[in-house]
Amino acid sequence: MITKEEVLDALKGVQDPELNKNLVELGMIKGIEIAGDAVKITVALTMAGCPLKSKIKSNVEAAVRTIEGVGHIEVVLGVMTSEERARLFGRAPSEMEGVKNVKCIIAVGSGKGGVGKTTVTVNLAVALKNQGARVGILDADMHGPDIPIMLGVDERPLGSGGMLLPVEKYGIKMMSAGSLAGEGVPIIWRGPMVNKAIKEFLGHVNWGELDYLLIDLPPGTGDAAITVANSIPLNGIVMVTTPQKVALEDVRRAIGLFRAKDIKILGIVENMSFFKLPGGEDSEVVDIFGSGGGEKLARAFKLPLLGKIPIDPAIRKGGDEGRPKALEAESEAGLAFAGIAGRILSECGC
Ligand SMILES: Nc1ncnc2c1ncn2[C@@H]1O[C@H](COP(=O)(O)OP(=O)(O)O)[C@@H](O)[C@H]1O
Ligand SMILES: [Mg+2]
Image (cartoon, rainbow, N blue to C red; front, side, top):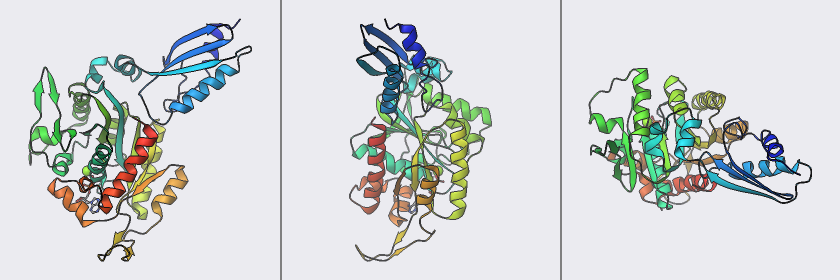
C-alpha cells in the first residue's frame, strides 16, 4: 500500500530549480491522490509558464517512480494564487496586489549603463506585443527613468480606487517614476525610498491581466540593481551587453552576482553588435565594438544568446522620438527584436 507520507518524502527530494528549495518546503504540492498503484500529484507553480515547467514535472515523476509498487503516475500542474506567491516571497499579499494577474515578470539588466538596456526593454515589449502578448513595462531605473521618453509618454498616470493605473502607449502599459515626477524634475532617492517605490509599483499599480511585465532594472551590479531584482518575484533576467571587452567583463560580474542571489538568467542580448554600411542587402558590415563577444559569453555561462541587435541610427532616433523602431516589424531592427521576442515566448510560454 502506497502512503501519502511516502510520496511526500519522495517529493522532498525534488528541488525547484530556481529557488533551490524542495517542492514540499515551498508549499508547491497541492494534492496527492492514491488509488491502488496509481498516484496523482497536483503541483502549483510559482507562475504559469517559464522554462522549468516540464523539468519540474519530469523530476516529480522520477521521484515518485522510485517508490516501490507505483504504477501509473499523473502530474497536474497548476499555478499558485497571488497570496501563496506573496507568502513564498516573504511578503504580504497586498504587496503583490497590482501584479496578481501578471503571468511572467522578466527583468532587463546590464553590467553597466549606456549599453542599451532601456532601448532593448521598449523594443522587446513592442516585439512581444506584435506577436500577440499582453505587455507592460515597469521602469525600475529610478535614477535614470527613460522609459517614458523612449515610449513617447507624457501623460501622468491616473488613480482609481486607491490604485494607480499604468499609462498605455502603443498597446503597452507602463509605469515610471519619470511620469510621476514630470519631465525635467530631478529625482533624489535615498536607498530605502527606491525599495518603497518599487513596492508601490507592484502593490498599488493596477497592471491588470498581462502575459509579460518587463522591468527596466537600474544599471550595474550595485545595491540598486540587486535589491530591485531581489524584491520582485522575477521569472528571470535578460542581460544586455555590447561586444567590447570592458562591457563583457562587467556583464560577467553581473551574471555572477545575480546567480548568487538565485536569480535565473534567461539569456544574453548583444546590442550594438555590428554596423551595416548604407547600400542595401549585401553592403559591408563593420564590427565597431569587435565581434563574437556575446557568443563567447553565452558559451562560458551556458546561456542562450537570444539575439544580436545592429547599431542602427534609426534605433537611436526611435528612442529619442518615443517611437520604438520595432513598431516597424519588417525593418532590420524590427526583425532582430522579433527574433528575441520569439525566443522568450517559446522559453517562457506565458
Ligand atoms: N542598437 C542601437 N543602435 C543605435 N543606437 C542605440 C542602440 N541601442 C541603444 N542606442 C542608443 O544608445 C543610447 C543609450 O541607450 P539606452 O537604451 O539609454 O542605454 P541604457 O538604458 O543601458 O543606459 C541611447 O541614445 C539609445 O538610443
Ligand atoms: Mg536606461
